[in-house]
Structure formats: structure tokens, C-alpha cells
Amino acid sequence: MKKTVALVVILAMVMSMFPGVTVAAESQSFTVEKTQHEAIKTIRPETNSKGFSSQAILPEVWIEPYDELVRTGDYFSVDVLFAGIDNLYGADLQLKFDPAVVKAVSQTNIDDPMADNGTGAVTRGFFANGSLSDADHISLETNTFNNIDGEIIFSDLFTGNDMPVNVPQTGEVYATIHFQAISDGIVNFAVTGSETEYNSGNGTVLIKLADPDANSINFNSYSSEVIVTDDLAGYVVEAGDNYPDIPISGATVTLKYLDGTVIGSTTTDEKGLYYFPSELLFINESSYLIDIEKVGYFINEDNLVDSLYQVYNFSLTPIGKFNIELFWHSPNGRDVDASVLVPATSSDQSQVVAWYNRGDKTGYPYTSYLNDDWGYEGFEEIVIFEDVPGIYKFAAYLSDELMPGTQFEANIYENGDFTRTFRMEVISQEGSTELAVNFYDGTELINTILLPDGADYWHAFSIEVDDLGNTVINP
Image (cartoon, rainbow, N blue to C red; front, side, top):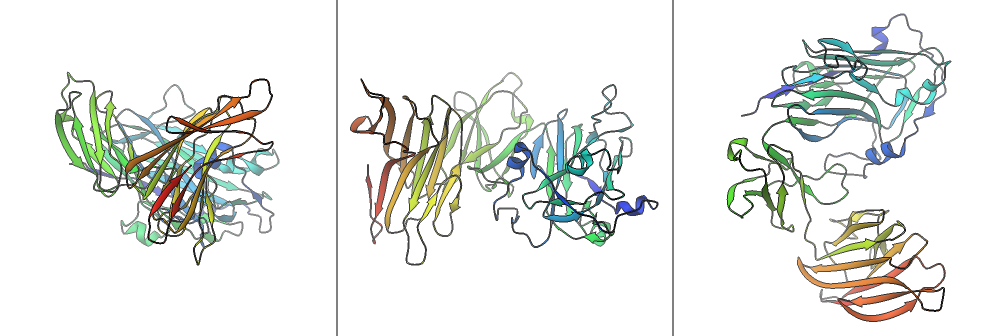
């Protein structure tokens, strides 16, 4: 039985906290610039399992991670993010927590980072960039914590003629809050913009934002949680570059000794979470195996758990009509990407599903691009959930600078069963500076062609589907 710890965040109108502050009624605005890391971290698809929309009517406020497991003693951070907010001039953060479960950790006091009272448990986000980098701009900032009562106060407010912030719809981190986990518990972040909801206990996070005229800014909000546990636990999610992860409920998770003897099994809840109580584990054992399975997904088995009381997250790949795995190697580190041209229908134009167009599993093109690796080698996967009549054309895309030794292998599964492998490899031509490609069907060399100048797509194979749903795979 785990206790629930209410984590309370109050973002009050910063203008009321500083009544003597003069706020510019007329200001220009600037747009927050993202670092590459932040841009990757906050990119969201048009819709996802949490209901986010990149074309939201209202601004959005949420806290990341959405669902996270940490062990007692671990240091962890949560981000407060804003998205799609124009003309933002100030925000204030007041956060209440149970100090028996988590404690605030100062980022500035290295001698006593978890003192009873201190400063610096919050790291500033986008308000620390943009116009605030200029010496002529002034902001009021409060950044204190109390580890006896469990409270953090953080605020940022532009003053004078500072320019307000336009936060893009892809999202930006407003503040990062730093903690250490002390004991088992659940830290809830139920975000609301309504004081009525907050005061009635229906929300644990109350947020208010202000424009240069001290008007409130309304927003959509979403909830998340952090679980502190010393049990063997983790999340099971759908494989792919999903943001956020898509939880898989009802998956069977089995814990085994290395010899295959089953210790116990459990099923994941609606958040994809599983637990194995620490009492199930023998102290003299340091390694275990975990299997995960659910109908409609490939089994993920014999995952080695290297030590006790750790957090282990797993993913399951959905089984489609066809699953195409791409394994590739690039000696010079140039990226190789999988792509498929999906045939048109009577109502839909043909589409290329690739890293820049992840497709759709429930509507046309009924095909999804699960993940995109880059570097010297990687793994990518495309799933056709429902085929349409016509010819699916699969190709590998290479950015530039092909070298001998560049290769990729495509494994094809039909209805979950392995069907065929195609392999391609760039080779040197003896006595020539031109490059060629060897094409293999399994282990059999079936063709060698010269690479034309400027070639960047390699045709790998095609799948032909007739009106009755019969399929033929062609090299």
C-alpha cells in the first residue's frame, strides 16, 4: 500500500506580490530561442495520448516528466513548461511538498544543498534568456525553499520597458525544480488554472500567468506524477519516438531467475506501470530476467535485470500487417533513413512515410514510422497496420558522402512472422573511382549496380497488394 503525497504548486499573480512595481503597458515582444537539446525535448506531435495539440486554441502548461519512477536517495528534477503563450510578462511559483518523501535541493549552496531553509532549488528557464541577457533589462526574482514545512517559492517578473515573451507552441521550460527522494510515495502534479478547483482539492497545481497589463492568461493544463519506490518497478510503453510515451495497460510482466524459473508475474496498470515487491527478491541473487507480452505486440523476453531494487522500463512493438526493420551501418557516420511510398487511394494522395512524416496508424496511410536513429549505425522500423491496394515502395535514404562499407539490412515480418531479408552494401569498383551497390535477397547476391551521381535513395524492395488483399514481395 503506497501513500499518496500531494505536491502543491501555486503560481500567483506576481504583480500582487510586488505592488510597487511599474509594468510597461506598451511593449514589443521577442520569441524565445531554443537550444537543440530543448527543441528535441519539447517537440510534440499534433495529437498524442495526453491530448496535447500543436495547434492549441489556448496556451498550454504542464509538468515533465509525465510519469517517472525514482528510487529513494535519487536526485531528480521536474520541469514546468509553457507553450503557445503570447505577451507573457510574469509568473510566480509557490510549491508545497511532503518533506518526509522528497526534499528540495539547492543548486547554489554546495555546502548544505538540503538545508532546512535555503535558496536556489529552482533553475530559471526561458526568462533567463532573450532580453534578460542585456544589462539594461531588470527582472524581480524570488527563489527560496523550506524543507521543514515543504515549500518552494519562485517568481520572475519583467519590469520597466522590458519586452514580454512569446513562447512557441512547441513548448519551453519555464523552471526546473530539483529534489531528492527520501521515502516511498507518489508525487502528484494535477495542474489547474482554477482557484476554485485548487481550493476544493481537485487540483494540486494552481498556475496563473500575466501579460504586461496585469491581465490573467488562460491555458490548458495536464497532469503528471513521480513515484518514489524501492520495489522492482517500471513502465511498459509502445515502441517508437512517441512524445509522450504511449502506455500499454494489461501487459503481462514475468520475473524469472536466470535458469528460467518463474518467481512471479503481474500486469501493467492503465499507465503501463508494473511492480514486483522487494520481498519477492532474494538478497543472494543479483540478476534476474523479465519477460513482457501482450496480444497484438511482439514479445519482449529475457531482459536482464542486473541488480536489485532498480527501475526498468520496457517497450513493446505493435504487430502490423507488415513490420519492416532497418538495421544500418555508415562508416563515416552519415545518417541512413528508412522510407516507404504508400499507394494512393480513391480519396487520398500517395504519401511518403519517413522521419519527417511519421504517418498514422488509425487513418490513411495506416502506416507509422516508429523510430529514427542517427550516427554510425542504428535501427529504424516502419509498421503497416492496414494495407491498401497498390504498390508499397521501400527505400533507404542517404544524406551524402557514400563510402564503401555503407550497408543496410531490411527484415520483413508479415502478421508477426518473419518473412524475408534484403541487404545492400556499397562497394568499390576495381580500377574505378565509381561506387556500386550489391543487392542481396537473404544471402544470395541478386544484382550489382553502379551508383549514379547524386543518388540518395536506394530502392530496397516493394510489396504489391491486390484488391483481395493478397500480397507479393518483390526485390
